[in-house]
Length: 417
Image (tube, rainbow, N blue to C red; front, top):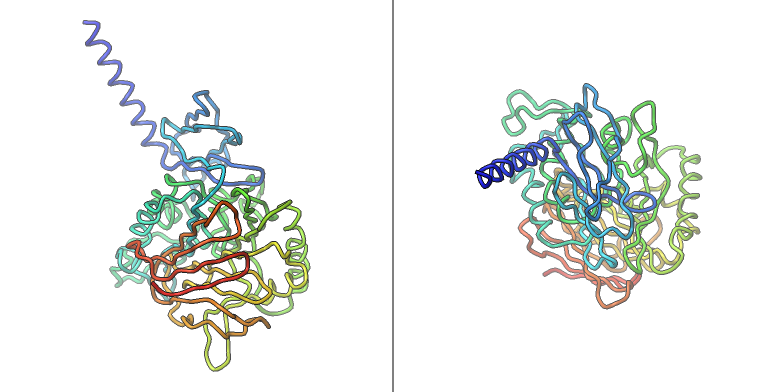
């Protein structure tokens, strides 16, 4: 009889745990200023149960539910020495002392606008979900999303079955469809570094970004946070500095912006006391979406002017998206510019594959490679014990390596596989 009772109680416990997990929709770890944070999205009236190293750790409410976002967002600061973190019994990924494998992806959402209807229901046209599974399988130590997650900005055309019934606008339904549901394997694989893109500005997807993924606390009465200050992520001998350049203008009179971003570039060195620095920022400073007849488009003049003369020499690479292609661009006196903006959204077929010799904002590309027209992501692997040398590969969503580069500080050498 006692055995039957124990079995019955155990079954009840399993059912309760399964119910709790079903109501906690998503959970992940994310770098924020000062360290790491666990976050969760739940339909429950209260935040889920969390544990750090087997001790209960109450989560705080980050954002209450409302009509557009009928879910709670919860957060929990994770101590640097934590060995294990769980939410509703599910273990979350924690950082390694030294990140030897870095996954870089960006521009992942499914574009639906009055002019462009990407087929969100077709995994060949919008392959992010299958790609996320492949990306997670590369066993990254940290995942850097360089921005632009929300792309379903208007309703699908009535006659278009490719995106039929897709939601649109800045709401939980869209955030779940564009990122949280298809990207679930990524959040189980490694801690995230989230970079704000121009699709996450307050005029577009900023309310969802501020509630769900912004690294800073949600304190804005408008429901949308302004661009935050740069912050540092320690990758072990290498510092990744995250910059919010989502609002960086690309033309017109932008002196106030230039002054603001100049101050941010000047602050970078102080965020990393020693060793090489990478910048993670959505918009590339010098890259090419179009290169024809001596004309190059895709660079950001505001950021180029703001960084001129103040970019620390220890900045060896810039990780960006924005242009929907893969590019690795090496310059004589500037950081290597990596573009990984080809991870789901419709591609920029006009981006050049032959990049050597291009002059972008006064700097000549002396080495590098591009590949347009193929969805994919970039894996970066540390070579040796230090932080100076890295090998990185541009992969398609089957995992096949298409292009390979080696980067030693600011020197870059690339080739096709």
